[in-house]
Amino acid sequence: MSIIKSYGFNLFNALLNIAFPIISFPYAARILSPEGIGETMFIFSFAQYFALLAAFGIPIYGVKVVAAAAQDKNTLNKVSSELISLSGVITLTVMTIYLLSVSLIPRFQPDLTAYLVAGILVAFSVLNVEWFFWGIEKFKWITLSSLAVKSLSLILLFVFVQKGDDTYGYLIFLLFLYVGNYLINFFLLMKRITFRWTLKGARVHFMPLLMIFSMTLATTIYTTLDTIFLGFLSNKTEVGFYTAAVKLAKVSIPIMTSLGVVVIPRAMQMMHNQDQSGQLKLYKKSFAFISFLAIPISLGIYVTGQEAILLFSGQAFFPAEPSVKVLALLPLFIGVGHFVAFQILIPFDKNKGMLIATFVGMLVFAALSFTLIPTFGSTGMAWANLSTELVVTVCYFFFVPAAIWKQLPWKELPKALVIALFFIPIHWGIQIMDLSTGPTFGLSVLICGTFYLAAQHYFFKNPLTHELLGYLLNK
Image (tube, rainbow, N blue to C red; front, top):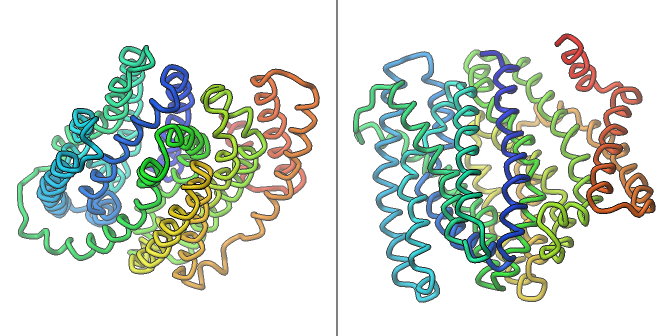
């Protein structure tokens, strides 16, 4: 499959990941209170952290080794069996620790049943084999399974969440989003490979996995434990406000990161074939794409933060507006950081550099969280999150080969920023019209988006808009 088709399927999957929370979270937020959302997300995030520990870096490492073995059926069967077998042992160990934690820590006793139900996510982590399909570039399968699971999960949401105290129903909905995908992908994998339980060759993978796991462990401190930190240092209501803000700020992240999943296998092949010019061309286009999208999205979230939080979550979540504005730059920082980490550092075996960057980020996050959350609550957590993503992204660049970062199209960033700054007067002019929240938001997005694309196309002659226009005209 060509990289255009692969990206097409992965982009569709990314759009699904954007549309889904736009449909599901506003429904849940209007039925459950900020405290109800906060309580459920705290429980789910705690289980999610253990699930990430159980993954042990395999979702990242697996893409790389499967891509390298994709052309040899026997090698593919071997490495897949080794990684799944190793995952089984690690999952069993982590699940035991999870059960002991929720059973012995007094803080969890009032909601023990909910924590035990959430443990399903940890137990089924061994079935998380999406890395295999990323590695063999079967993005069509990933997209279709994601579509099926999201459709079924929406039915579960509407059936089980109908009253203000249906927090268990919301928890089941969250669990199915993950476990449903795990089950489908594992079933498809078992039909594609000859699986044999073995740990003999697993030791070859252990040290690279340990390095990636260490990086993942540090990363999860600020990507998963943010909700848990906030719950311990503040209260459930602040967790609810932060959840609404971070979901809104991150709703576009799948588009920023979707290209990276496609590029990893292709970059590995180019490195294997010593195609340096092709690899550099790939990186230039990826960076230009992220610059083209991330800056207007970030500024758009900042400008329309008030209307967005009211539409997305409802009046009860209006106190989350300051957090939305703080987190507005996440699409830019995460988009660039994901590009550097997954498209450059991983193919170049710069795992040590990634570990150092994420460890620095972990220290920054911990320091800012304990300093800001007790006083500023969810807004303090937002500042800690944003600052950490910036620090980690900057640190990543210290480990990028100079021959690559010097050739990246840096001029695309100020071009995008110059155009996006016009969003501020445009939005201000629409607000003067004194329309209701929905029309104000819709007009702002429509006019700002049209202005941005037109300026990029006609003023800066951006090749991305020319390619997009040519593709649409051909179709």
